[in-house]
Image 1: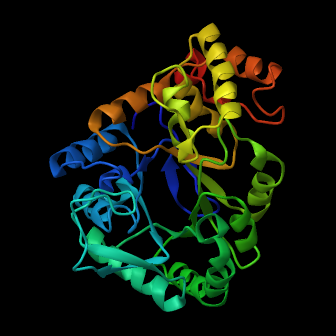
Image 2: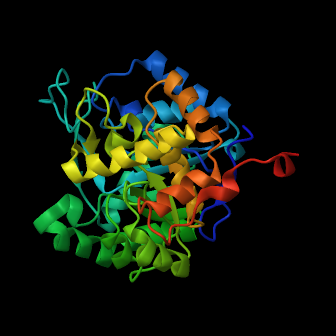
Length: 353
């Protein structure tokens, strides 16, 4: 394994995942097509780099991402990877699908559409369908995808009750019988994670964008609840939809939370970039490394669309960021004063030997 990529435990399970993981949304042709050859090269580069956590979903390209991830992992020993996929949507054939246009943000040739289903039967079917698409008998982590008001709005109560009264039983049964090793949610909000902790035991939450170099609100309520519950955080969207990767100095419009960034966010990132200049730190490197300062965060999983991006991300993840950089961000009130810093992640001669 690459020396820069350590492993951390998922909750109280037997799973140890790489602190840098692979978010496979791009393998479903998110926003733009990726050829099968490029997808193979990208996944191979990630495997060769030492990443062992691969997260996919039926949603990503209407099954395309799962097919590609399964093809990449199938020849490996099961001890060499941890596989995560999601439930909550059932894919059904769609003979009218226009595969020449983006559908739900994916440029995919897969002629399927999805219906939400958080019932017991829906989760079991989704799990079994994923096994077929992946071509793999074992799935390690099963995440309930997009539960909550962020996705469902006025239908939140309906789908939450569906999961609470029916769907959770499927997760618990699959875990108890050894078909999966961990259960969790894959969401963009903390509120629904707090709600489900009252239903049963969750091992992890894949949280996109909500704990980052720009956002630390979860420090004060959510993350302590996770620690008490025994749930780890897998952190998706570490760049907050791109603004922490691109910065705000270019000609393109920076995006935050899937939309053009508002002025107050642009101004905050500009101040962070000034500190980056002072210490010669890459903004994207700081965004990748910051969340791992918190003991609840087990892995950061940026989306990786090509092999060059994999290699670049490894370099960013390996960048040596001086402790003074983080302290200066706090002194300038650009980080929450309570935020734990990734100081222990910095490699020294003592701990490298």
